[in-house]
Length: 615
Image (cartoon, rainbow, N blue to C red; front, side, top):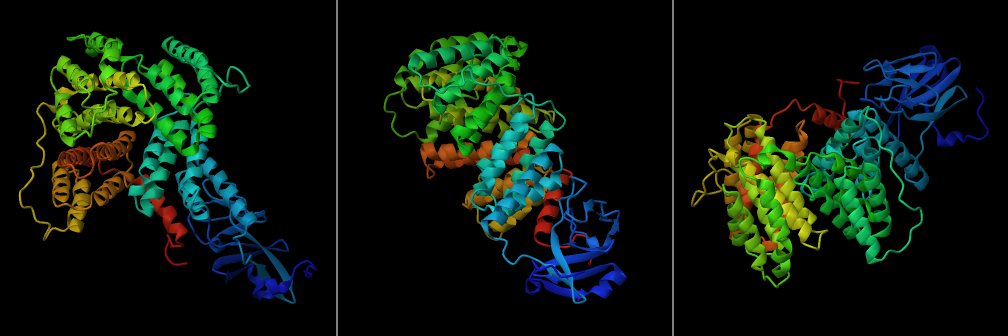
């Protein structure tokens, strides 16, 4: 083969003799930390990375036939010339230029791959693999794409992953926003509590669930706004749009509702659209077990991350269909008999204008003791006192509506902490639904200024919490607080290690005791939270467990925001919230851990570790 005039041999690396390549059909070399194999096939030379992009097996141990290179570990196949894979579970293999000159074999590996064009090309490739992984439910591809995206774009990689996943999840699922995107949002909300490996695991868990939600499902075709023109609106226009949207949802008309909402996203502010959406979500009681309100809140949280201009139009219309078609609990027997709870709620809603007339007074600082007292009242075994306690807290001017919502979320967490394991296992999810909904109500207060919608949602959550009271009969015993507890000899490290072991044994009460001891010894709560998150992402956790850990953290953050972190009552409420969280996680551990194993493989591959014995 003649040397090309366009190639400077000084830029290449001499890896061996041409005679040896022709005789053996293959040469191995290491060039700039790249393990490379050069094949001689039908008179031509082809250089590729020697690590199979699937799981790192040496391609030099593979075979070439008809111009196709096959890895013998999982039979991934590659076009020898371009490196493109025929099997989507594998990635394309890197190829390099070669040249034969003066009886020697030269391989050309770029010295600098940090220029903007190279970075853009790598980013485009990784994002394509991210979409392919979701399209075909390929978890190893997803894990590798997340790792590569975060490595290439350290500052913006997470946001780009959320953007791509939101677009995919809201497009390729007829029902729109679902559990997968909710998990992804939950995990993205608490990434700051995680170490590097758990952040990757959390994102991959979310993406895998988005993929599962959409796999072989019919696509959702987004509808256009009522008018393509963006014009300014006045208050009357907004009032009309709000009325239209509520009426269309009430009449179960997804198409009309979506076109109205699409138009509203173009014309009004995020807060205006949130008011429309959450008001419609509370026109009927506890829609679809609370998931409609919860999903809507998560959709707005994702919009907060991506940005209103892009995220609003892409994400928010995806919540409409489920809102229109959801189960309405005023139609359920347990809301009607033996007590007519629907009428009780409707009467309370009719009094909301009078109830909130005092709410705008200067309340002063809300104390943790007030939150705790109202939370206990909300756990009453009589429905009317529950409604009255909410009305009194607001109308007295002592607590604002956000503080009342915080009390409700705290009460739901206490119900979880008191859940007795003699109940049916599936009833864990019943109390979890209450907690996740009540936390959604609390978090949605950031968007709602009118108070009316939030108070309606609070009533729905409070009465649903009442309906779960039997799951605390008998009530599980809480770990006692021991006076004079010493941190030595059981250090924080020892307690957390014991917690991981207790989780592996599905020791619900033992895990709760360890968490209580850890908190009582005044150890770093963020570290405990990090371990609890690890206990979730290291498992094949189901949807509700992801909801739980995020709801617990966000409720604690809200408690501290409202009352301060030095409040002793807040400290005790945090303990109860984390005990309930721990008990739930322990009850749902361990699992097969198949997805975490896949994520671990991707992490080991990125570090260059060998998965198959010696090369």
